[in-house]
Length: 259
Image 1 (cartoon, rainbow, N blue to C red):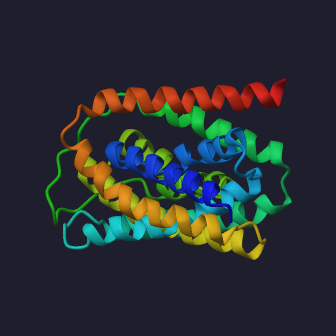
Image 2 (cartoon, helix red, strand yellow):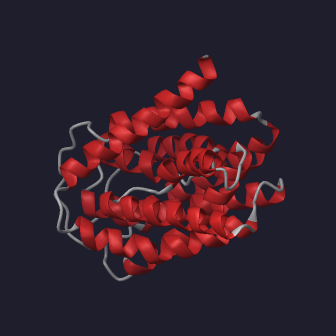
């Protein structure tokens, strides 16, 4: 691989993971457009939508392992919620990851544009905090949780994401899950989702392993740094900036599709 391409891919992975670490959402929603447009714009590499989705899927799988491990003794990993949402999202992500091999480039971009638009809007839906203490029983609508997880997994699997950027607002706003439980549990559900997505992408031969490894290394370095930086910054401002970036990307892709 061209050294220039390696540097660009690493920087994309680093910047994307740093930002996602600061605001606490999955990185694929940021890295997908960066991988799709920046290397081609700089003339160092050109990736198709299928290849970008495959690279993102593998990267997310490794990036979420560390997050789940950090919460293993926190008391906020709710196993019942993980069981219902995790099993549903695994099936959905397998279907989405495998089915994406039969979709056109434009169809994959349309799915991303829809997810990005929803993510940008849901980030600013008012969220009312639900009181909770570790070890306390958690009540939620099981059928609704599983249904939403399945739909999220199917759509996210198509673009190589794990769906955390949609899962978090769904759990907070619709399922009324406490914030700390949402953060910890969504990481576990995201990890399960990424397993299905990665398997689907690998089986349909949509993964470029060289760029994927570079992205994995960058994310493992940058995500913890971003998380530390985010603790010292105004996350409200960061979320506004991120939402605008995501929305601008969605508008760009919608424009290319429609025009």
